[in-house]
Length: 180
Length: 367
Image (cartoon, rainbow over all chains, first blue to last red; front, side, top):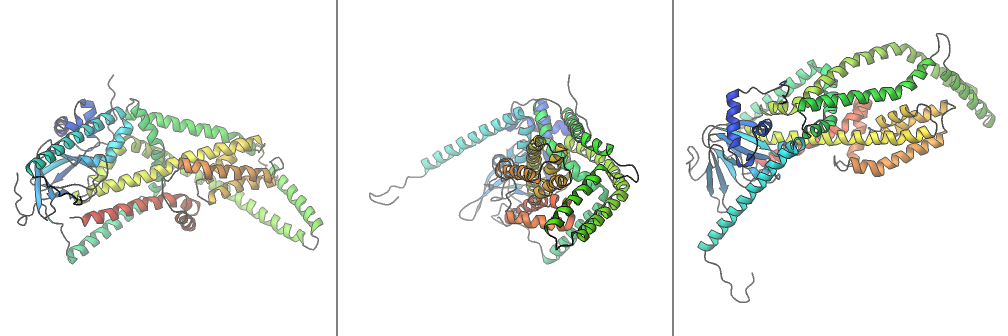
């Protein structure tokens, strides 16, 4: 028998919007291999936020609290360089996500994120994830496992990138007796 | 790659907007008006304050149980229904435990014009003390002193008897608040997450993350305090009840519950709770001696202070003892026992809000 929840307090959302959000979540690697019933539970803790062009979602150095999934629109990820310039790292589009490290730890953001056109983001926060782990440890563990895999993949990408850079940059040779 | 449109050359991130003096004034006025509106609405709905606070306390204490049941595969509504069943069962157990004591008191209640067994015992004790003290310290006018004491007790008795109907009506009127609190708690337990999301949806994007962090910190502070306090004082109640019962204290369970409830108040609570039992033992010849009671209360308090409190409460509030002492004094002055009870979680909440606001200001300065 399928259990139904009492619909006593539900945010105003049409069936179309719900299906839309479900489709967005299905495409996110963080929620890979989850059933629709699980995704619906995750939808309950998501925050839907609308951003105007030019609006900053978060700035580099600010303490992070959670990650964002792009439901519609696009977001630039920008980094400050040591020479004072700014570098556009990537432009993310629909169903991509960013800021996922803040789900694991409240640390300073490593880059800024800027919205370039009207954008709708779905935010999931550290406390929401912890609450999910309390309420449904199986589902929470699956999400955390996916998060660990994504973090691992990003680390591999970073290692590859460092390796590539070291190949293109000539090594600095030290003279005998020179301090490191 | 997208090229940013209206940004200064070579800039990808829009700079932080610095408000002009005029904008700051308008902002301050809007904030002041919003605060005034909240206070105004709070004043109109002040009858809801007590039920909402009771409901929140209940939600925080019972919420983990509902989460645990949900984690076992139950739907949220069923988990909440079971929690309410446990609550009503617990209340029934407490009433069943306290009721025999109340019933025996009611049976001993005097008819109009008669004096209760308690009053006769009290009179007997006072006579005994007067005789003993008069024999030892003859130079003191003990007769006059005890007459004054009897007159004082008589006045207190009269005002208590006259005030009883009002007290009973007051308690009955609070029954409505309790029912309302239970209804609010039911909705909070069932749909608290959706309610929080609905509230957060009104926060502007710029303050969104900070608002969530603040709510989470406040939530954690209150939850850790309330759950810790509930567990600690339940253990203290059980620890006091057993030796009181073994020592033959009449209404041992009632005095243990009183001690456990009073123990919620830091520092002053144990003294208030112990004084009820000690005062009773002074008047009731069937009660254990004061020495035995003091020993029981002191030992249980030491166990609480050295073992239970550090383990259960830990450093959940991370508050300096001086802050607690000053806070309790201020709370007691402003709101009596309720003020003493409420001040610690309020300070914890204020601390969480202040630290988040400070972090927000620091973040706002980040570029």
